[in-house]
Length: 286
Image (cartoon, rainbow, N blue to C red):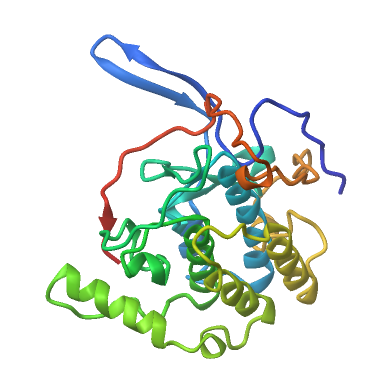
């Protein structure tokens, strides 16, 4: 089946376009692209797990979204399945990144300074170990959280989910300890080695280090090839016979964006009109 090529637009694939934000009478209104189910919703419809091929394809798209967001000097800080959505109709296999209510600029002419003794921002289940330690977040924390999320897709549950605790502080402490104590080989056992390599690589990043997004994307591509992925839309739930596959819009060939520290001066802020913002609390329970 031949997929249709989408023409280049002022906004990148995988980010919903914001058509209007303003006041109508006594209400504030936001008009944006219509999206489908979240990855969490789809996961539950698929029995609580995604197969390795589906997870690898999602990982490659999610890496594209993160690399683009980071190229604008912004980190997400709340990576979780509810904050990634599937497109609709001809883009049903496209993964979108949403909800930038906890996002933060990490680069403005220079990289943000390291700080510690901070409260956890994000969702404890997927947060990086360094975020649990109270360290200022940077690109490495989004990327490690993506690794935790992908392992959740593969396993259906993570070893640090559902821990008993009397207080939020105790719960966060137990989650952090379990993450530190869990052997990566055991966590990733039974799945393509690339998932373990990815998590090990992202956990090894320094605070201000520029991530090797190309290497990460290649890991997911290799994991997909190992399990027989041949076409970008071959998600198990897409191929179940209940979806119209004719006229699907292809995922565009990828050109890696320049990161702020690829040049001496950070890129201009721009309008970022494709990032609809949503509110959020500073930290969320697992």
